[in-house]
Image (cartoon, rainbow, N blue to C red; front, top):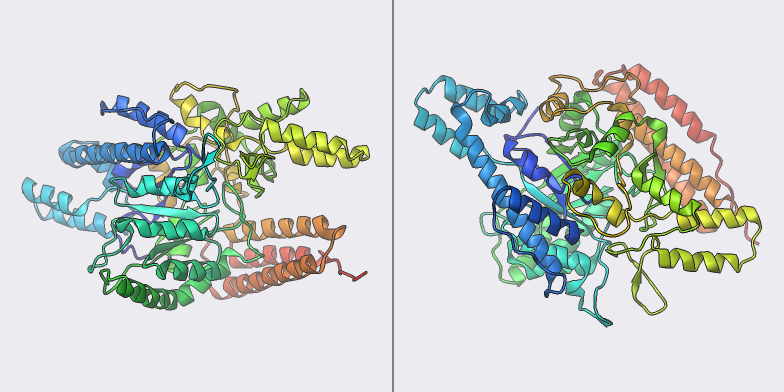
Amino acid sequence: MSNKNNSHTFHIPVMGLSFTLDSPIKVAKYGISSVVSIVDDVIIEKMNEYYSSKFELPFKAISNKADDYRAKRITSYLNTVDTIVKQKFENLKKSFEDKSSEFEKYMEMLPDFSELKQNFTHTFQNNKIKEEVHQWIESNLKPGSIDVNIMTKLDKANFKGKEKLSSEYNDAHAALRGFANSNLESSIILSAGMNPRLYSYFEKFEDFFPNEDGYLRKKIILKVSDYRSAIIQGKFLAKKGLWVSEYRIESGLNCGGHAFASDGYLIGPILEEFKNNKETLKKDVFDILKNALEKSEKSIPKDLDLNITVQGGVGNWKEHSFLMDNYKVDSIGWGTPFLLVPEATTVEPDTLQTLIKAKEKDLFLSNVSPLGVPFNSLKGSSNDNIRNAKIKAGKPGSPCPKKFLALSLDEKGMPICTASKKMQTQRIEELKEENLDEESFNKKYKLITDKTCLCEGLSNSSLIAYGIERKGEDQGVAICPGPNMAYYTKEVSLKEMVGHIYGKNNVIEVDNRPHMFIKELSMYIDYFSNKVDEFKDTLTFKNEKYLKTFKSNLNDGIAYYEEMFSSTKNYFEVTNSTLNTELEKLKNDLLNIQIPIFEKA
């Protein structure tokens, strides 16, 4: 297995608003990259104060009455994280001579195939001069990257009183500015689809443009669901002189957080397409980039790196190594399992125990997100319990103090969230006027009251874990693990989890975990079956066409896996013949789902 970056072959993706908010402070010193959400400036401000106090750094509160307070809070926190990571990393390098040191932990956690690890062993064995060993450490060891994430859809307009502010003060624009103005030399991951106005805003910041040597102080990563999406977005940005350094492919359903289901495209065939077309993608986009840089009289690099990474559902060393070897990806995202690693993420104790006990039936796609996108949910989360109690008491909805998901407009044109008390009360009153039968009323009532406050729910974990004051009505903790969580059943140390990723040990104690490709396919077939049921009574020609395309793509994916499992060596926990038997069953399940036929009136 190659490892051209001489570091880890995995990264920790963004999780929720707070679960990875301080992950770089925990893991970057070991060379592990992780992703911070920069959506919620309220919790960011609180965490900045908490960590500034803990590490005795100067802290100056930024009032929400200050001009551009959102961007300034984000910049300040990212600079604090950067300072702490650098301080911890310097201490780690100095600890080289101590037994059981942090340095030793850094080296032990690297995979055995790592060139860095092999080079160090060679240097140390052949060189007893302390200064030269220290020099090697100084030249070769690097901390993990402090990357950030914004969901491009979360770009609500903001107001000063009743006056609407210009688009640069929109939520995602301000978050981008907060990152751009920070000291970080890292990447911003853009997820949840294309936002042309936001993408154009990148042009305002010099850090995103390459120099002649191809160095980018700040890089752009796109989270994509397929090759077509990657090439469209990559070319759009290239026309502005902006390079996408990485395409981060995520399974549509076999992942945590919001589930942006593809039209039946499966992860294996998607990765195959990227592997086969990577050089074409790079050349086509680079040619456009050069023309744009030339027109704007900016530096034109001779070459730029392009990485392809993947995440969603990977669960053991054999799957990890297969993705690396077969598809030549540069890194693999391990998200959900790290929720059980307190050394890497921040999950408060009660939620941690609920995760540990979770079985397959406790992890499901729900309708709770105000975004209107299926959301991975955990049965028994405190956020769910609080929402259900409010509904039972006849008082559904949240006070909505933060409004990050307030993407609808009220009667006065002001942002409003579908999980807010105001909107749910209004919709329920309108529903009552429809004079529906009880079954129809209850169905629509549930769709309204299902929506829950994720702004508070996804940020509360850190506040509870660190005893930071919370104001207002308690929304509990919402958490959004992927289906993979069902197969992890205990709290795990960082060293154990990293060892699991590299095949040194195994932290999975159940024997019923399906292969990641099989699991994703079964989820897509369930999703497709539900879509068929959903469209039955309100079928249109467009819906029928969508269902046919979806089924055709699934069948193409199954054919791809049949060929793969017949022609590759046994790479996995179970034999290829077992995988083909499971595929055959799922193929029959899909065959038995009949698409209704649209008949013109």
